Image (cartoon, rainbow, N blue to C red; front, side, top):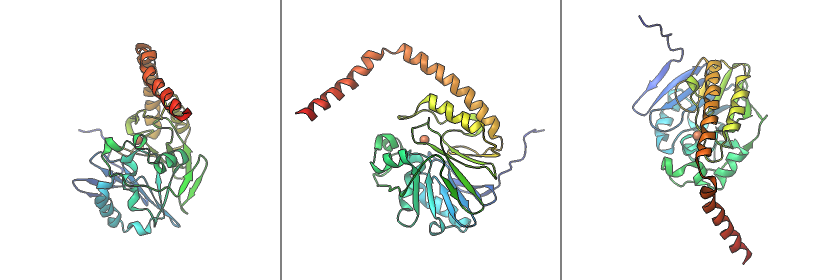
Length: 270
Ligand SMILES: [Fe+2]
């Protein structure tokens, strides 16, 4: 006999590329089966938003899911991007022009400057299409959808530019790549930092969350347990990283970088 609880999140559509899953009333997860991050649709009484949109190549499948719940792109008021990685934002340009695109100001800056290294363009093989950010977000902003009130939390660590969105009334925590079901962490990339990551997780731990809606993987109805495990793991990662830096010969690794900075400065002087 299985002791597994029934899945509290009904699957509304399932094809080769993605599934459409109901996370709560008027909240849907579009979960891709390839490398794209999860996309979310939150249908409020006065405004409707998406949180992340996945890779551009998945756009036809994203559209199919949106049509399934009778919410085509022209009914979406805003797309909020959790951070600059293209597995989350690649399809955003399809919404440009008619929908407001928002991201944390540090992510907005990287995206607007087309910083391909930060956005991991090579890794996701996305076309070099510009994504314009209309609204630059900060910690403490509030996105009011009528029956949902999403607080913007600045939660750096995975990169310098990550945000989480939290609805305290309904206990919905959209944590992107900062926290995933089972305490899985999104890892530390380019501009990120393990110390920032730990601080961000501690902030998420203090929230009265009920459902965790992450950038990858399944939905979770045990966010408190998930964040506890992630904090434990992040401390493990911190000590592993310290050992790794001890093992490296820091001088010889930094020398080529410093030399190229010196060379560039010389060019500016001449
Ligand atoms: Fe990411």
